[in-house]
Image (cartoon, rainbow, N blue to C red; front, side, top):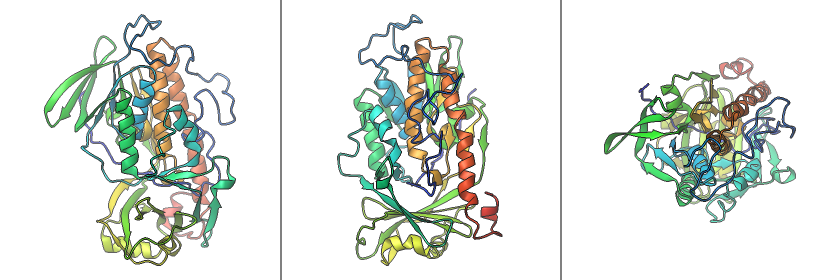
Length: 427
């Protein structure tokens, strides 16, 4: 098959959400081990990645049990957090991945918060020094006017995982790409996958397009990290389930006359009649504001008028006047997943595999987690592991229904507008 499909910008800004507890089994901070359930024990009969077939390697030799004398060739479509995490994890096993990122430079987008529970995952990826530069800022609390009109403060210091991080998203993704390149990944920007076909030798022939024209690459595995668009999976004919029509209208707010003093809770969430607002203070002193609703609000005056109705969220600006840095932009925020997140020789990671409502704050962490475990599955499959695909598919499929149930509970908790179509659709 040789169809093409554009990538889509995804949005997951919700830092620590009104989810009062971690969602058991969601692809987020509970993603500690592929062989365990949320209670810590592997469910009876659940497949697992074989430890003995996934040794960590740093040399170029590859005496695999299937007779392979070389590491596998892996092409990763997409250079966001999911694609970078896959490349970084593969490098631990001596595998040099080719990463194709269709954009030149960083595309501004929301999604600046990393929830507290992902610290163990960063350690497993060897990224514990990611925040040492001081570019990103820790946060220990948030405020939400959700079930009631008055906001409730939540202090993370009293929870097991502790502080989260407000990210400079551009610097965060640039650092992930730098780490991947440093550890051996071939990183190519300005290129995209235009078509994929399976040849007779259990390999892929990948058609690649870029500014220098079109060419073909042969690879053993292909990883779809193209976001909710799931461009590669769609080329393979895999259907996608979509559960709602949530869209985020995102604007950057610049305080006039200087930034206000830091607030105890740098993230505010506020439910409104036709959606909900997320406002967060960024490390550079600006504020990220996203209106999540069933339709985009992109006209600047309409966007600001809607924001002025969110009095509690606006309190984060300390009464300062502000202006938009530029026109608001629309970003998909719906929950969706592929009917199959992997198949022989291919894996989907991050939003391509399964995307989450920003209310859950699982987006970035899920991308890192799926990237890590897709790499383990690739190594296991190349070494002869018979259950690698089944294990990865189980990891994705077994957890998403519980996420949907918990998401529904959180939306149903808002009953202040019984006649609102937005809230009615989510009950």
